[in-house]
Structures are given as structure tokens and as C-alpha cells.
Image 1 (cartoon, rainbow, N blue to C red):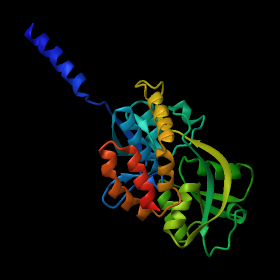
Image 2 (image 1 turned 180 degrees about the vertical axis):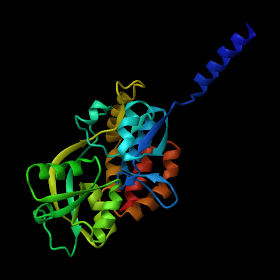
Image 3 (image 1 turned 30 degrees about the vertical axis):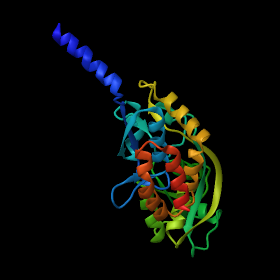
Image 4 (image 1 turned 90 degrees about the horizontal axis):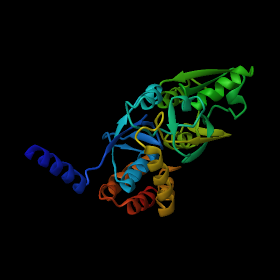
Length: 277
């Protein structure tokens, strides 16, 4: 009897004290401005700070882990990790493995070239040009689609997008195709690179969870994004991360993260926006 009373007391104590559920968030942290690791190992990016803010508003904790892109959908899909937040376009193929949230971002593909290459949006994607893209991305899929249509272009796939950008700088590929915000980040960081054109693909990004949403997370994620938009937090995070200098963003994040850790999502996002620009 005493043990039963003790067990009831302990359960009640946990309920009253508000111990929050912790969910693991998987992200391919090599792709600014959506997610990356700074030199000190801090994981930051638009997706990750949106997830952190949602967690504060919805009353749960998150543990963000760096994950390989080529297994992220498989592992989230079977519940090995709880949430995927990795700049992922919602596609029919991926929805066979995971369940997506409502779209939170719309993106197009942009083509990066070297400033001195003399290429344009047409010549960068034809005439035998070698185009780099990360494996199993919609950028790689677009180039493969050109090949399937008989256009003379060569797809060079990489395990990570930064490797393709390095090869572009070194002249080993003629162009790199990736989502526009990431291409903007690359062009801002590297004086040798520029965007020669944008392809309107109108891709919708979504967060994703295990098939069937066993933890009931999609409603929390969708409602969380809606709250962030209503509070102005979402727009400030866009202003902080999109089209800005990554080094300024990193400094802003270090100066602002204490506000988020204290649960103040509004002031955190406003501080990020002001200090990044």
C-alpha cells in the first residue's frame, strides 16, 4: 500500500512540476541559412530557430542532432528520431516514408556559377556543362530531368552541398543548383560566386515526422508556425536569416540566444533581426 501511495505521489509530482516531453530533431546541419554549425559547434539556422521557438510556445523540449541527409527520411519515418527539420521539399516520394507538416516556406532553385565563367542560365545548364547538386535533392532531380529530356548536361552529385560549392570555386564543375536562399548564402560568403538565374519551381518546405504521426506532433508544429506568424516572430526570423551575412547572423545568435532560453520568443526574434542587418 505504501509503495502504491508513493507511486501516485511521484506521478503527481511530475505532473505538477511540468516536466516537459523531449523530442529529438534531426537536421542536415550543412546548409545555411536553414541549418548549419558554427566553429564552436552551435547549431543554428532558420529551421532550427523556428523549431526552438515552437518548442517554447508548445511546452516541449527539443534535442537537435546533426544527421546525414541520405538517411534522414528513413530514420524519421520509422521513429528513430522524432522530427525532421532540414529544408525539405514536400514530395510524393518522401511522403511514402514520412508525414509532413503544413508548408512553412516556398522556394525556387537558383544556379550558382563563378563570376568569371561567362555562363548564363542557359549555357550553365546545357552544352555539356557539369552541374553539381547534393544527392537526393530536388536540385539534383531537376538536372536529371533535363538529362532525361535529352539536354546535354552532366549531373555531378555530392554527399553534401558545401562540397559542390568548393568544387565550383575550384573549377571542377561549371555550376551548382540548389534552393535560392542557400545559393544566396553561398554567393554572399564567396566573392568568386554569383547567381546567374532562378528557376521557378515553387517548392514547399515542410517539417516531417514518422509515418502516421504516432506522437501527435503535426498539430503542434502547424499551430506553432501559425502562432509565430501571428506574433511577428516568423517574419523577424526571415529578416534575420534570409539574404544576410552568415557571420553577422552567428554573432546575432550568440547575443540573442539567452532571450530564447528564457522563453522570450518575441524579443529573441526581434534581436536576431536587428543585429543581423
